[in-house]
Image (cartoon, rainbow, N blue to C red; front, side, top):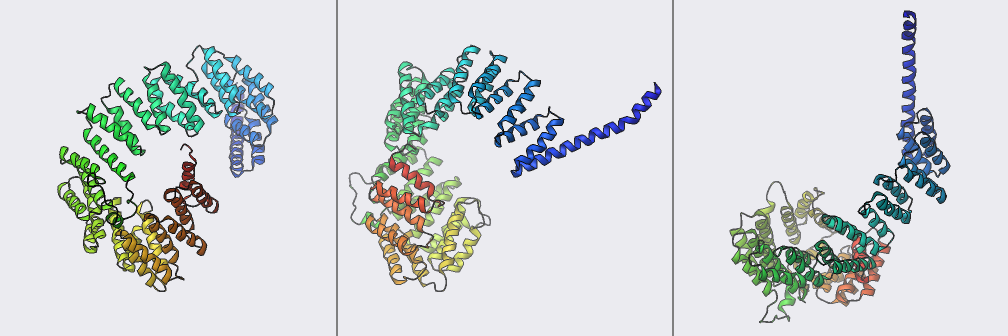
Length: 622
């Protein structure tokens, strides 16, 4: 006995060494196979995987690698043999049976695939997971109808009509069966009302198509008619109306929801804010008015009144025919009615917010909106300056608003032509060692622009260089654009650049006719200068703002024709589309311009916006 023990002891190290050696070899081959697979050499990878799998058929990682590569190489018979070898050892593995059937679909042997899927179901026909495995394999094989039938069959077999609702709804939507998909999502909401948000997110995958939105809306309207007390259904109907831009209908539904849920105006407030954000100003104003009258103790009254004032401002802006024409257009030939001055309702609404909620951030922001309107829309620079100085004096404890007021006060001084005072305001923000927010960076950019406007180009470049170091800043692009523009045009003579800077200053000060004349003069005086394409683009922009659309088009077209190497061509095409779209209301020619941009400059930064505008002009639901 002792002799046998000694013999075993003697051979054990040899046996162990051989085993370890074989294991190391298999590991090396597996890593080598993975390397070949990553490099795209699947044939060599398969050979190595097969060698490893022949030694250890229990290794599921190698099994999966072989399955993956066989299918990519379309070696379907080998994949079948792989599955059958595994199933010979594990005949009741439902997942493997389901995947084997999917391989037979790839071989176009659908009868065989169905037989194997039935084998998989027969293993355990009364449990949900069985139908999930089979349905998932059918989905991967794009057998959508069969997957739906299997999920519906699973509901019956498991005795639970709630099963697979989301799966079935998704499959119906993939098959463009929008009414059926919507009904399934309604079932999901009916079963579990908190799933409303999820259902909306899934339905949104097809409401972008007119037929999808129409079908979903009709089905939900029918459901609401059958179950008028189902509030999630009402909420879904309101959401669909807003998706379809039918804000008047959505408003009526929101009133019902607010009443039934005893929301005390909060449902209407949420609607009003969304309508405001989506530029449905009439509906937003109506909702704000209803809340204010019906719920005088509304707990977000300051936000409500500020939102209402913003809505009134935007309604006036839509009717402001001079808002793109600059200050002189307003004061020369566009008198406002003394009974209702433009933006008067909005300013009065902001003033009420200030009076009713003094010393609050909402009051400060209301005063900032008044200052902005007086500067940008009414060109009342004295009134704007007074409001801004009031903010910096009274609301210093609200840094975000106070800093914005300081920046805008610099702009007001610039518009008034007082460069020294403008610089002083900008330095209050940008004079710190470290710029920690966008307002401070914008102020620093404006200081560089002041140097540019005053023809101190080297000083401007020095300031701009420091602003282009932060790649994550939104200001960087503007700083970089101005830096490149100055560098490209400062040599050999900067005479044209000086005149361009002067014209740019007049444009910034909203002296649009003067700026236009200056840009046109540059085109005539320096016809061979590299700056002419920029001057033509600027002239076109000003002509467009002055509602001289035909002349704007002529400027853009000259740029496109005379400067075929210009880096501004894609932007010019975008401007042509804008003039046709907004100035001339010619959707056909606007679409043609945007399509030309996409054809000639598919990688342009304007490409995404051009596609969006084409969809808008065609009436697509986006």
